[in-house]
View 1: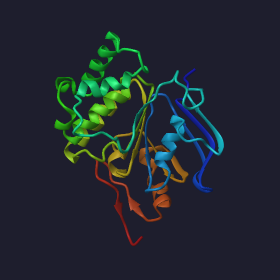
View 2: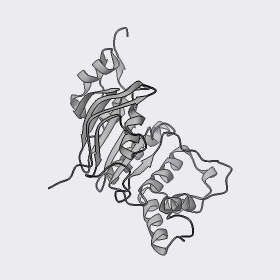
View 3: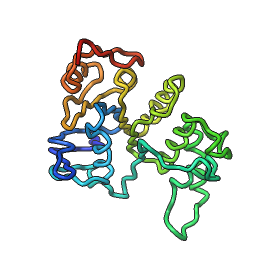
Length: 248
């Protein structure tokens, strides 16, 4: 029996008594490639943090591979929207990814840790730059390094919050190609504002604006997007963002 990666049932989340997520029901299958799209302040990042166990729900249940969120036996890969790092700090690519194998104080990194780092860097196409300082990398290269750090513990679920925000449009296709390669051995959940681009790369879309308007195949999402954005849209494929029609 194939186990679902994530099962969310009747979940509500409030901050200061203000609803952020309302009556969310969502199933993410093993090896799924899901994009969560929606307007700003629609709860997309909060939903990822619920899955990670960083935000507690006020109502409902969440299971990640059959267990409660935050269970260390199911390591998740996570790339937040804003990664804090000092470009002047003297750290190279290899050391940055090695931090993803951190075992706690007084525990040294093993030969296996170093091997896993090399494998992760090779998978994202950054092994040849392992000795380069982080300050010398482009935005797209930095994102690849952070993805390597997110997958170095070999997670079964990778959560990405707006990973394309700092990547040049020319590099986005190669970045999606990387994600398509990774999803062969893990489920991937991608938060994005670029409706048209994700619709031509991912399998499924979840339309979220505090409540879930749609969850299913990307090609069937247009009608639900109109309800969510509250304006008529024309969903264009092959990497072109959605086009807004009429006044809104």
